[in-house]
Image (cartoon, rainbow, N blue to C red):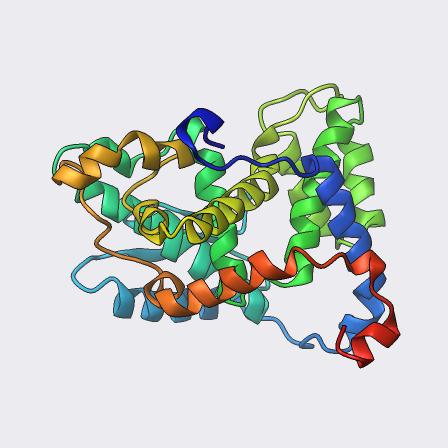
Length: 306
């Protein structure tokens, strides 16, 4: 994240791999308990396309953004300022649909549109390797704060991080594919997950396409940034993060440009960001409960109100 010299936040928490293993272990422990509560049906891609198109048209008034089906897409979805593509021949859950709206439309497309409408720095409409972690972290946080993030999604993200580590340390495509199957994914999902790991690298192991590591890393970094903004009474900085495709440090580096209007405030904000009081309440609660060590809390303490 941003350097300590600027007075900005930085993380001192677990590594990506440690965090990923934690979430996978937790998901596995909860698997049987939660499985009975899952919906027994899936939504076809065509239905999700229609529902997303309606929601996007209602939100981005005055802008034409197409939701299209793409049979060649490896990921379930991809977004730009003008279109969102969905993978065909794929079943979606209701969580998937809501995640796509929050992640792809209300962050990736939204920041692209805001960047295109900047008065000077039109380049803020385009992503770059240096902005990827913040963009994906912001999009994943959007899922979480809107209630669209389920434990299954967190497990899928975490499994990819573990699989990348395996590939880097020599696991080949078949071994990674089997790892996903043994972790509970379907054959098709396991194959597409393995494809993500081996994009542009030899299938024999020793390398990996590491982009998927930024989802969890970015989530932890952006969440820490939002909490820092609340603690220092600077939630306006958090809103500025939506002005285009930015890295966290850009909010501080462009402070004077935001002040003089050379960088415009974001024209669009996600619904959860528009409700500033609700966001502040969630972040304030998060800041407080982080002081409670659960490993020191017994069941009797919960009954007695800690």
